[in-house]
Each structure stands twice: as C-alpha cells, then as structure tokens.
Amino acid sequence: MYVPPGAGGNFIGLHALWCGSENLHSQLDGVHFIEKTATNEFKIPRQHSTLWDLHNQKSSDHELMFVSMYPELKKYHEVWNTFFEFSSGEISRFSLSHFFQLLREAEISISAYEVLTRNFFWLPIFDYSMFYSMIGGKSEKLDDYCKHLMDMCWEIHKKENKDLRSIAHYHPGLDFKDYDYSTDIDTLCLSISGCEDYITDLMEIKSGSQDQNHPNELPDGIRHAINDNKYDQQKSEIVVEYKKVFFKNDGDEIRKLYKFFGNEEYFDKNTNDITAKFGQYHKDNQKTLHDFCWNRLLNSGE
Image (cartoon, rainbow, N blue to C red):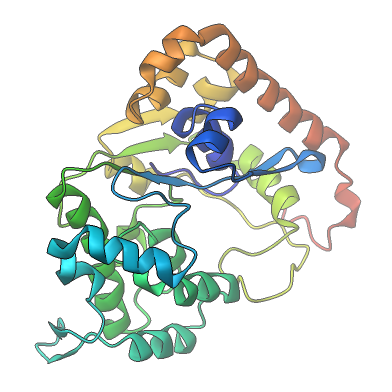
C-alpha cells in the first residue's frame, strides 16, 4: 500500500492492517505503538508477515532460528557475499560492506542507515523499500543492490506461500527508474488528489518542517509540498481516495482498506466503531491544523 507522508499511513496501519492497538499488542508479543497526541501522530510497525514474526528480529538468536527453520531459503538469508551479476554485466560479490559504503556515499538519511545496517540479515526477507527512497539513481551499483533486495523479499514469501503486507510512501519505481517488482503483488494507493495542500500542512506540523528530500539536515521551517501521487495511482490495481476516507467518512471506501489487508470480516463486525475512529482522527487532524502556530515558520512557501 502506498500512502504519502502526512496522509495517515500509520493510523491506517494501526486499524486496517493490525485491527487496532489490542490486536497489535497481542500479535507482536506486547510491543507498544507510539501515539503523539499533541500532533495526532502514530508510529506503528508498517508491515506484517506470516513467514516470520516481525518482532522476532532483534538478535542473532532470531537469525539462527530463521536459518534452522527455513534451510531451503539459503539463497535469501545467505545472499551477502554470494556472486551476483550487476546490470553492467560485471559478476562480483554481493558485498555487505560495499553496500554500506554506497549508502554512505549516497548520503542516505542517518535514521535509514541505522535501520538498514542493524537489520542487514532481514533486508532480503522484509520490505525495506521505504528506507531506500531518495537514493535511487545516485549509483548504478547501489540501485542494483536495492532492486535485488526489494525483489527478494516478495519472492521469498511467494516461494513459501506466505503473506507479506506492507505500507510504504511511494512505489519504488518513482526513485528507481523503470523498476517494477519481479513478483506479482497486489497494490493499493491512497490517492491524495484534491487534498495536497491539506496534507502538506499536516506533514509540516508532524515532521517539524523537515524537508523529506534532505532528511539529514535540521528542520528549516519551510513548508515542503507533498504533491499528488499520480504515479502511485497509475501503478496500483486499487485506488482509494483520501477525501472519501477522511473528509466524507465513507464506510465503503474505508472497507476497501480492510479488505486489501484481508480484514474485511473484522470491519463488517465493527463498522460503526471503525468509522467513528476514522471520523475522530480526521477531526483531531483539523483541530491540530487550527491550533498550530503558523507564525513560527521562517517561510510559509506561499
């Protein structure tokens, strides 16, 4: 699922992917999501796998458990330092140290670098495409590394007949020219058409004026536009409208989100409660916009 920054991806994930905080806690062994009530912001795990519990990837013991449970997946969990044919035709090692070096040279955000280096074992297994954003096109070899890892995470789930559900900001083809997944996967886009200024303002508040194109720099106080996600709409089989989900509180449109993640039965049993929560989230966003002190900006961008 593609949800641009500021458009409620974490809130949607909490409810449509995880079916609420209680289910999230029970499925991930009590892990807590973060709610920043001052800005109506949520932070939650944005993917779910039936191949492996996302919560169980914190130590080398978990890596050993995965290897012993899935010996037939050696191609994936031992990808580092295997030989690989790069797009240039060169055949050389798929080197972890070289990958890290290229990430640094591409000036990937510090937070993304920390995630990718800490979780290197899991890069071919889970969807880390959101962390590769904004470095596409900076190095042909780095592009090859990222594309191969993005392909592998979907291939490994298909091979084992398991589900991987993920919420990213954009289709990776936006950053990696002409890229598309090597495996057929279902895709859904939350269209922000007609709501770009509204979402830009929300992103301004919730990110602290952080330019998403320069994540290593301090917030600059400038309003950075979140543009209409037309590319993601074109690359998606299903398009759901932000305006209908939040401004109109359209139950049928909200149900599409739950159905995409295989949770339509949960929605049908709890429709009134769910639509009320989506409605309250939107009201809280509007209050956040109304109460925000816009005078603190150095430049409104208008």
